[in-house]
Length: 437
View (tube, helix red, strand yellow):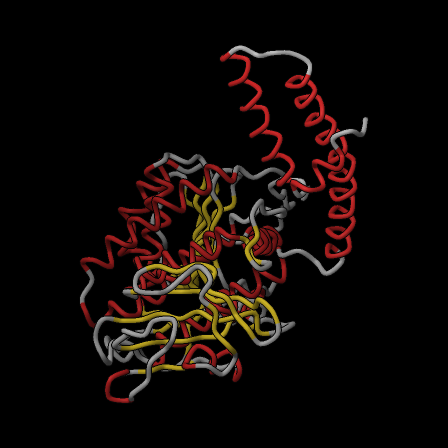
């Protein structure tokens, strides 16, 4: 049976795809393998080595992995006789099989799920001269399940989908992997640092996207609030931005800063379409890179002190929802690849808005709820007026001692506060004092 894990997702997840070197692919693979081994997961582990001869360099690691897992399946062209290892099953591939060109790892369990799905590309890596791969590393349950289904079909087994996923455990696993990745960034060579920073930024945010519930508790301008914060955190912690902000559509041609960190201005700060690099990115629908703000005499109203700046639109299938703006501390800090990374992050945010935000039909529902609330407030205004009249009668019908007078004064203050909260001015309060509920 001829299947391709990479092609099953490549067209739908273009914003997450990244070209990687062999060293980067090894590191990603090790991050996943180490997570499984560290937590002693008794799982089925699927991996593609392209050729069995590539397995020799990883044999000791996979002996440890097999001691933990229920079963490890290694796919590849049988160009050499594979070793006998308890718990490891080698799956032979025909040289013409699409899987023979793919480097992949798939873990699909209730507590942890992830998939690395890549295909070897033409050409050589510029830094090392080695092979290059184009692909996706994802925690998206739909991506992982699709890969699991195809693997089951290739093995001729009945597919048994995961029916219930533990998002709390998954979140903990993602956090651990991201922490180790950040540590790798700290120690990586400068020549490869930017590629890792770009990948880590998208990977970290994709993890937040994968953990998004169908009904987010808090929305900001139609976008789940924790996604906005996750994007800013990734841009500062992994991408290397000294400041980052996200602006979302408010009304007309105006966009409001809804989340920011560093030098950015948040709160009531707004920007118009076409205003500064951020506004131009929104109006044009394309990212803008300001390599040297001083030399180019470019200042963005959102981050006016930036030495270098990237502004990328948050653009989806329906509209441009806003922009991401990031600043660096030194000129010429970022390249066109960095610009594309921020643009990809913007597309992911747009997907979060379109997939998880409130649908248009919810507007009428919110109006209905607002009318019900207003009706309830109207009904409550009359009892508040009556309460005020009772307090007045209490004063008029007898002398009060000091403590009683203090209590009535406190009641007056509370009644006045309630009246203001329900939109009942003092004049109307006095008019209603004689009315009964």
